[in-house]
Image (tube, rainbow, N blue to C red):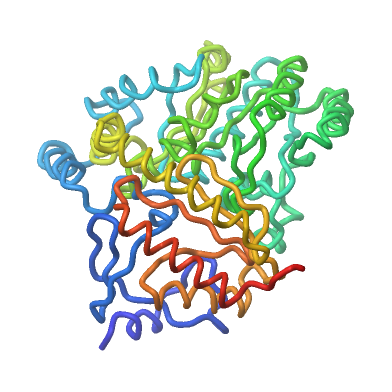
Length: 426
């Protein structure tokens, strides 16, 4: 019996309304930029499997790192113990992070990285005798699916049934040239109450909102105002981190550095689940006390798993290699060229790119997870290209090793999609 048929008996899939969604496709193999299904059909993974496999699937260097480590030390509790892979990873990543980051807390995914950041922010002020419990976040931001992460996310399609249980969050619009003065005034009114612990944001690109992009200079003004009010700044780089934008971290393009950073996804290049929440020494110091209750009593079973740490270290080495750098730059250049093509097509709007991220909207309304969206998804799959449209938003985040020929196929399929589903706005 096919995998897809066996799957239906017991499995509940994420982000899926099983009542009106086609059967899950059975994937049997992945290699480089390609996915292979149970019938033998091949697909270009044009979104790096949710922005994780940026160096391609089953990379031999990452496989070797995992294999070598699992023969030495597979798993050990991280409370009271430490090990070489964790220490080595932190020694590699701290010098690469934006200015001021000096401490690393390990967990398993982007949502837990965010929840840890929120808890650190609240307890940071609690330990100082300051009861700040409110957060500020952008409208349409997305930070994960656990309760804390959901609370600071602004996409109601994910949150509806749970909103009565959320922590308190004040939302501000994403800044633009036109609204920046109003946004700053709105934020000042919120901060004047003195109860805001932190502002959490996706720097430069809001991923789940449909790859919506904003300017570093406008974000910088918001961060500067937060700094004036001693409000902590939490950069959620789960999606943007590790080279998706024009720099290793999007925060490098912003002159005001964050106090806390959340990392996951491409951290281990899709090989194993792991996340990091990093912070400044100033924040860490607020948890040092003779009073045990002021310690940060948070932990996960697989915190700093040695195999995941070893893979993450190898992934950092890969990113810094010339082969990856050249591949990334080629994709950025080809995106720029394709953007010029899109700009002359009246069936699309809001064409944009940042690093290896390219996105636009079809000039027709489409529900985020509706029937028409599913038709677009199936269209790309039939052509051998894997993407996940968000309503009328089409976006690409291909692995850095994607070849020019493969990118040409992705672009050609995208143009065919526009021809089939776009509506010309005269």
